[in-house]
Image (cartoon, rainbow, N blue to C red):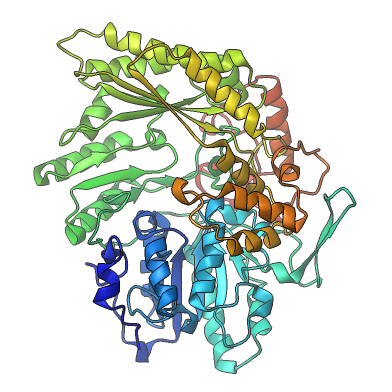
Length: 613
């Protein structure tokens, strides 16, 4: 029987529609005909989770199975959580309002390191033991996947098993194994044992980690020979044949990305050396334009949305972009459906493409030069020039645009003050480009925003061995840049270095951080990526009380022969290649993108996509 959340409670929290369920296209099933109940948990609020494409795909994919009912679960906002704890309401799923502790699986998607305390908080709110070692046969299995799962170690104490790579096939194999296990009434560990042979499954409790006196890892080994030494990620080779929903849930309330999202391809050919996504999603695999038109048509008919967003890591690199956008405009313009093209590259930007994208509505434009000088752009392998940027913004201003956002990073390896001053100079040149555009062509009211985030070294990138700048150094760099921006029409935003510091710790952390996460949760840390709830001092207390030095993880350079906490995960990209790329970065050498020349990264082992074309 589902939990009834009284109207009185809902009237006293903001956005009650986060908790009601029953939206258009949500799935309803008869529980008497179900073998498996899966709670798909997003460790953030409804508006963020409902904007995530991976959740939409896996929710509908699991519900295609007759024996499985997948329901959605989000982190309740602080006001709702207070009411739930006050009235002893456990965390429930949206579709049936049943407590998720009664389900077979609780699955988390790991999109951001700063959501880890929310995961512990959600398990606690559900009434499920937060430590995997304390769960019994009465409890659900807690699993996780997503980009942050590629370094699973900080969450090793809390998650029963991780699914590495793309979930569409692996999740069905796990469900099949569960049905078999359930029918035989075997012990809990027997199920984990049975899935340990599925490629892409990592079960932390089956592995033992030993440490050196200096805190680095001395060995990381499976407890039995039958468990794999390396866990290789799963990929989908043919995106045209894989499941993609033809309807998605339409929320009652506004969400972050309230539109249809169509995934053009997975992976990225560019190889920016700071970008984890560019390495972990290799090789590039595309959907055909015909398949994408078919998906777009069905989704528009089943949802009534008035905007279609073409998503991928670098949309303008899609090889059939012209064919696709022409086809979409022919079909969607008469229906007043707008096309949005996020993640356009500075060097492949065209007025034609832009005008197509914004025939129905004009919005701002975003470019990411990442660094202020050509030298530093070569270090990070960005592969664009200042000329590319100025040409692109001039094209945009000439087409009637007047708003431009520019994204940069501070604290990149080898960065100097000249590189930072270069960011301000680029901003000034963008303003000059606007001023030199004829008045009758350009839009009114120039608006240039420069945003800087702080560099966070990530696993499986050429910079995984690098240190992060200290918080004080990052602040000094932010003030220095601010002092160099001399024009009123340029607005400057920056990220909090404290948050970036924690992100760096958990991005490259090991199992010792589990106790810190637990302690921080006990001190009330949650919704850490929401500025008003971020409690940096509580985090620092947790590190001190656990005897863990946070700088050891964030501000220390690693040697090539150190065993890294994620070395047992195989993403296809070889360590040799990453070392080679790191050495090239230090020499300011650029590596051409995969379509120009194969750089031998190792992703050919998957025998798919661009590697075999």
